[in-house]
Length: 221
Image 1 (cartoon, rainbow, N blue to C red):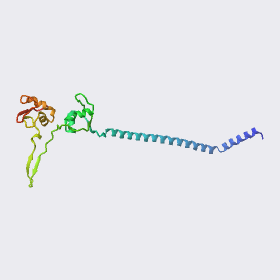
Image 2 (cartoon, rainbow, N blue to C red):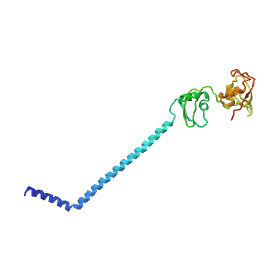
Image 3 (cartoon, one colour):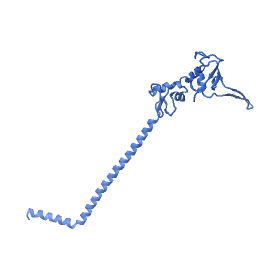
């Protein structure tokens, strides 16, 4: 048999085989196609889910990082304070240090210049520094002694610790316009108001004698 005839016969046998097994081959090819499609679908959803989880983890990490930024972790700070309407540096300093004089430390920490103007909504860093001269007048504690029978036998309050009401006031040993303003208004910086009301009694604000009757004017509302 010639070589060409042998090749033709081989091709014919192959075609005959495919024709006789056409249903089987179609079924196998269909199965292969289904397996490939299923693999593509699985790979798609696996990739989508991975991206979703990555997004969730990134969002959680970002939220956690943001929360940490809000915490006071600096050991040189007492706290952070959000300014509200009506605030001023003097009274904020009194809140944290019991001394209005520490307003200069708050200004320095927050790089506030000029007259120290602050606005509502500002976040102030409150530095951990030593308190200066106390300017807050606190309600004095009453010293009380109780007898064995349960009777109150002593109740004393130091005169220099008492709050001063506006009106007439008799000066005491150790008084100054600043101390009187603190006890009367809770703000030593208002001593000038008392000075101008009594400038003819004590023309020199540094020279106040005990036993003089002065006027402590009411603050204007």
